[in-house]
Length: 443
Image (cartoon, rainbow, N blue to C red; front, side, top):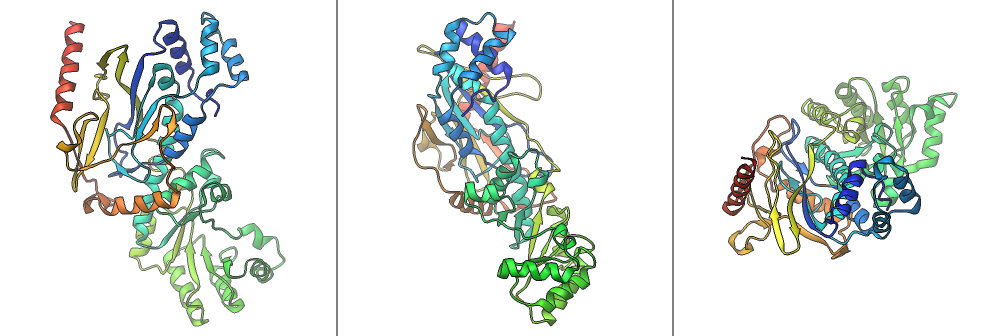
């Protein structure tokens, strides 16, 4: 995995650490989200599999090393630094919250304990892959909740922020409970059900709508979904009803989805096609889905594109990756940040989940003291995977079960609900001690 996909200052710090004799110091970093976006009562952790794959395959290629050497920022770096980068492999330990787990602000999704240069260089990639997929999974679960058991299909690859983002958005959406994705690469890479038949251009490429429908049915058989609103929605569904079986159903992509949906349902039922389903698309999100169902729209499935693949109302997370411990030889120090609105807690941590609150503790506090479920699990030891990674289907089931176990008020789509996250006495005592020691040094 190319290691150059990082910010320049990660590399300049690495060179500085090396020249300062700090390459073998052992650092502990935590990745967390400072605050929840508006209209999010919780997040769904996602992206860990790609993060672990990156760490296990991390290395610099020769052309990358040559590029770094060519930069003026490294004019004073010794040749031995580039030899170090040439041999660099990730040799640290990783603890993480399993994908699909609901998480809250200030809770570590992932902990890295590794030689300082290694722990520093990986910051950019870890933040981007975990934050992006967590963002999309957290949007997807809201759409799934709004649909109340009806299928949600992720349709947003063409609006995703890059071609590479499309498959990962499909993965995160499926993990969070969507029925599948339109992205064929996501289907192949992650064994996700894929959906999609034809666009308006298909219909317009034929001399008449009926011929386009007949040819589609000839190709797809029982998987046929007629896009019925290219010209006239009601005439389109009447044509679909005349052609009859085999078909999966029809898709509405414009107009008054509730009113049109009721008329479409009536026409299909009168033609004896009671099992034919109606899918709705057209700039949908969780609010529009909830409104359609509240209005009694007889829609069986929803395709959600732009709003889902970009998490349009909350497209970014305040994800951070901060050092919490540093071991130099036999001496260990605890680190924290105290700048306004960006305060962090020192020490590697564990999260214990109870029925209606979380408890944040130091990782080395005795497990017997706490009866909650510990969320952070060991994933890598000295750079080696500890166990086979769960299948995406298993993670999806875990997510559904974990969301269902949350307090009901957190499942509201419209109302903010606070979730209590307490701090153990030992963690609070350490935080107070570290702050006091910094104040004494500063004075």
